Length: 428
Length: 122
Image (cartoon, rainbow over all chains, first blue to last red; front, side):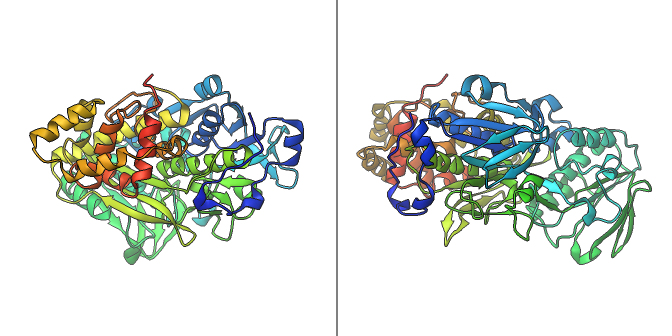
């Protein structure tokens, strides 16, 4: 099915044309070109499905993920709040394999050899690629906080990568007794899911309130001077959880100092804070494989061409999702899903005769503050002056009606069903 | 905002005659209806529509399942085009949809309508 001619969309004519020619050996052999995707989350799974679906067998797609199931970070706060069970945020790759012909490899991608165009797995297996999509999400910079480590996260979970950490935090939250306090250390920018820490605190408060714990408090120690949807959360906390939540920003605490997870103490420039439950969310960087492959810059994330999500460092590699530097787009599952579609189209454009169209991106982040009290922020994006820029946006307003907030929450449920179906090819 | 998705959900794909019947009841075609009619004259590019629709399918499921967000696969072209124009002109009220369709021109809307019309709910 692979054809040699290339029809390019007019707007993009000439852009990167020299980089997009089909490898000569493929023309000679007529073999299906190979795409390898590292990471089976909102970016990687979506890219795999769209390439497989739209190339109709003309491209061989291999999806690497380090587990045989995927637990979504998005909606994991709702699990903490008791609004979802763990099974409902956990998905498998069976449909991608059976209905889309995608080869799923379960294991850790250890290294990328960009010269040889191969990915080597931790078990030594080598996977050659014609195009590579890197979608590893984030890694946590544990040592950015004195006293914190991967080991310490077993006592003071971050739960910023969903799975066992999420369940650990859930269990610790539900083991609290009235009068015991929670301290959260929020992350500095840029980080995955900008409203996430504050939705999480809302879910903490919901659980404590539901149990009638009137003597427990939640303190947020934030290295930022402000945060996403701040007005909406502040209003919601005052309305639903009066006196329970204290947010202390950079103007007050100056900085987060050492953490003693065994004593349950966090030092700051404003003194020490003690909690029976510490939720420490450290600074973040692109998933380790991105740095190993030499795709990151000094920021720890990966520069990309805004028109395609192609790495500016290697024309045969695309980086999508949290690991990428995507201009005005936040690091979110929705963003990753959106970027995956642009990357998938450009990969098909590289390897088949698929036409390539101008990039478009979108994102919406919904947050739940209390039962049926949902809020959202979203935007549409396009490429302006070489970067991904917001072209229009919206945000929920303070003082909205209960009816509207309930609709917003219900809309988020529809979105979750939709994006997971879009990622994994499943249908309700 | 209230009920915006519900409105779309309960009115499954309908023919232009039904839409135009509503217009007749309102005597004069609305500006949105005039704009929609102009877009319906454009031949939609299905390949372009396939890419553009990928953005829609994050929420509107490809299978046709609804789960609180209405299906758009297999939707009648005239109904779809009018709905998009009405979101663009605030006749329909939805923050998400207003932003999603804001940058769609006539060619894009026609392409989307052409592609979505090729899909069958499963």
